[in-house]
Length: 310
Image (cartoon, rainbow, N blue to C red; front, side, top):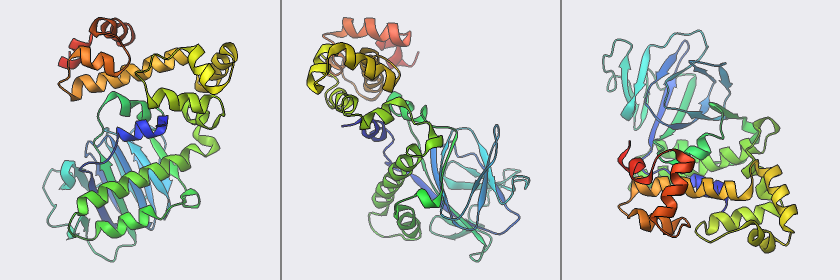
């Protein structure tokens, strides 16, 4: 397992929401669906994504964007066009006065608009992302990620758009998996761009020494890793390995390992009924006391208080 794969596993679509809007200028939608992460593309025409804070981003036909939530934002034919419809959780559509117009604007399965002949089509899928592991991925992204059509080396978005229009058996599962693939393809394309400023852990994956070390950490985080042991596994001296790891990843090997273990422990505490002692052993600590000491030092609260949401 590599760092990106581990982080993406936390944002895997399970019951993702999809929608397709067919629009004609002037148009503008207020997106207030509370989604943690959205993946959108312009299938026809263009769309401006306008955050409440920050510069508008223009999405041309075939471009793909990742938008971090859950704060609301606006999408329209022009940054100056005022919204007249609000998209709420569950793809519920209302006017600005909160009058529900979901059925009035329904054009087909997961498709809304005033006319099927609109000059712009925007399709999107949204995730409700939870957990500390997922947060590590979200923290590596700007508020809006745009990948131009020329850099999207995958037909996944077209397949996703085709599937959104259908209602066949098992469709939700198919849509979930297609959305996952689309997110992975978009993130890889984005991180490969010079302006992306990809996080150190991503860039380091291609390094002949640090890449294998990251795979060892993520493949078995509970192993009693030391700097010397990791260095020996990748064929480097302890000092050289430690320097190179810190330079490429941005923090020392043991600090990275501790941060990863704490993220795993935080999610296990919230998502399972395992005892703190069992969680400790799963993430590389001898017992509940050892985990509690490390957890409180790194996160400022005890595992039990974290589990209870305090």
